[in-house]
Image 1: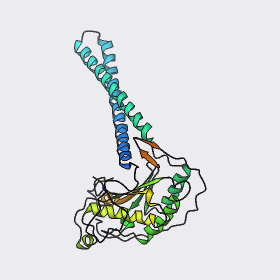
Image 2 (image 1 turned 90 degrees about the horizontal axis):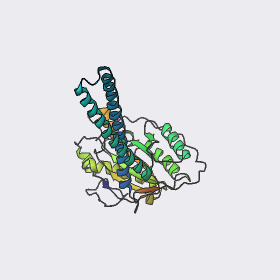
Image 3 (image 1 turned 45 degrees about the vertical axis):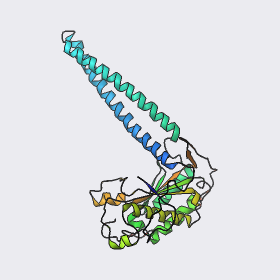
Image 4 (image 1 turned 180 degrees about the vertical axis):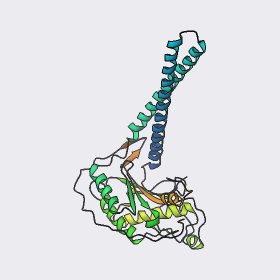
Length: 300
């Protein structure tokens, strides 16, 4: 389940506007995410099928060697070998079908975000300048803000260091090499459901609201720095997509995050069409030295 929200200040209100579409209009980013998930799942299936086929082929070869030594006397060994041969044929067929489907999906969405080298380099440098606040996944084209140093516990207002970092992020996103890309901003929480009265009074009634409000805050921060609202989609995913176990404090901290996925301009109709912007010099990165935030207590 995803909650898509208009980029308006919702903290302090009791209602959340639920929209059937994202802010990007005809761009179907949910379909893109679904295709990407299918591709990743098929890649795992393909690796497993290959492993199983290789394992059975090894066993079959062992039986062949044994049969060569004992001749035709042991008919049970013949039966076992025939069974393995059938399994190998079946697994090979399954593997080939998975490989075909995988290649089909890769043809639709590519093997990755295919961001320009200059943009990938700039975002990598940006993350390196803010290691306590930001990480950048170059393979998926995602800039991740760590909630524990982006917001106060149980709150959706950007902290000062986060605001400063978002100013630099907006400069990068508005540069010639990046301005043709769309931004899917997703809020995520851990699975803690006990919210304080103060948190609820700010309109964060549960993890769906809190994750949505935090994504909105990041979106508003970027739009306040000149990033066009037509490029932005905002989604709250609560605790539905953890990246680590919620059984530990460290795992819960990893799950509390806001992700900004940088997408091609056209992601619709089952395929992608990515503009290839002219690569120009990026503005020099400002030195950002975030201070540590002493945030005791569990983040909601």
